[in-house]
Image: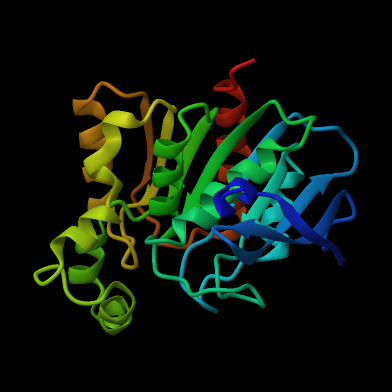
Length: 265
């Protein structure tokens, strides 16, 4: 058997204390390209969900770690949520490479959810750098039910030019600058492959976002519309990368309603 035949197979399950009495949490170790990678699973206790939700975090290493309370928030809305930590994090094998080979951890996470007998369809969600991961996963799996990118990166070269504070990390992880290795940045930029996307897309973005500029959302929207793909945009004029908690909760409710509305059943 090829090592990739094991992608998404669960190796180990460990119960995890839940901040929400209605949600059960487990830390999962699973296979991704021959690596043991970790992630968190959140399941609602009160209903048997048929909808999977792949939560793709932002950041890198300890920045933007998966937060149990956040994924429990989505599980509370009636989804079985799985959030990969990505390779090399929290005891997982390998090294994160910012939407390079570590995209396979998202793909294997999708397959993990798909292996659950009760799950009929899977929604994809990405925040910040997770936006790129979500789009790459949506391209890889045209059978996904819906895709949401919130404050999401869509163009890796643009991130390099906008975020001076990330350049050193990006040069180390990607191997150089966009001028030196344009193909490596292009490989990490889903805008070039959106012809393959079949899933309806919702773009959520704060216009005053300084971490991931609104330009990422505009470029994604323009490309999807040019290709006549299904896209909806929720732009918020007064918000940055992080929305106030009360607004955030409201948007979680609204985006999960949007996902259910786009369900394929």
